[in-house]
Length: 313
Ligand code: NDP
Ligand code: OXD
Image 1: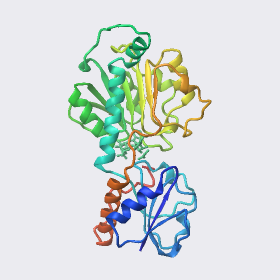
Image 2: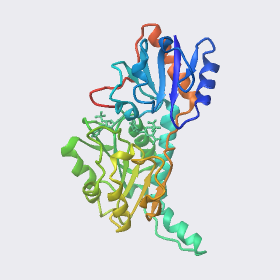
Image 3: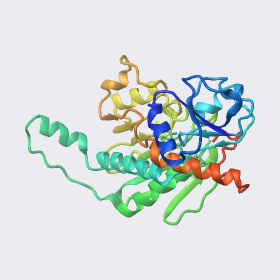
Image 4: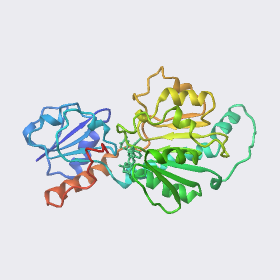
């Protein structure tokens, strides 16, 4: 009943150590080393080589080591097996920290004060209140709802948009294609926590940006994206930052990661770039999550947080 770890761009040793420390009786193997394919029952993966999972004849469950599963759904040979994604307080808390940090950077006029400091100037500006600012969250799932909970405590006006309708106390919500325009028109700071699917690919384009509210206290709309890079049209975001249609932006995710050296985004004004670190997958916390799911599965209790293969998230 071996566990296979296949991670790209992460240090696999951290995962193997965390799993072995918490489950010393389990055999844990790395995809980068020789292993017995017949023995693998569980695969813990982040961007596995296409075809790897198909080559494991006794595989029972695939665990995505991230909350997003587009790194799997793009594998045309993905076997028809349960795919479990990460839903864990540690990862959620990390994302909420990042969202709060970015919303506050723009709300509290970070770029103005950073420029003033660099020039050695004491340049106080009028500061509006959180209650004057409308923050709109796209994606009202595990991460979107927790970000809303924390933003609410700071006093922002809250808007939300999702695929299916939601009722959230203190939040004005819209759903689906027809709900997008009114949601955007009522949003000063847009936070995207959407999964990447066929429907969300390229969604954040010039048209969407131009639909955001222009009458808010910040002097123009702000885009914050920690969902997936392919949801944004990077040329459109870059152009909107340069011509002022976007007052600012914070991006953690990009169509190509690492962001290529020649991307114009590196020099776009009022843009904060972080290298896909908004909510890192912590090996210790997430090994505990995966092992408890395996224990439940083996006890016949079923699996939680299964991906809907038709919806793609
Ligand atoms: P969930 O599956 O819990 O929530 C997804 C939300 O997106 C749901 O509210 C869903 O609507 C909504 N949604 C999906 N498709 C559409 C659509 N076409 N139109 C409108 N709304 C849509 O996911 P999580 O909150 O756990 O994670 C969200 C994403 O965050 C991940 O998929 C991943 O891409 C990203 N992520 C990024 C990280 C980082 O470090 N940058 C770390 C972790 C995650 P409905 O409720 O109606 O189903
Ligand atoms: C995730 C991510 O999906 O790190 O968890 O992007």
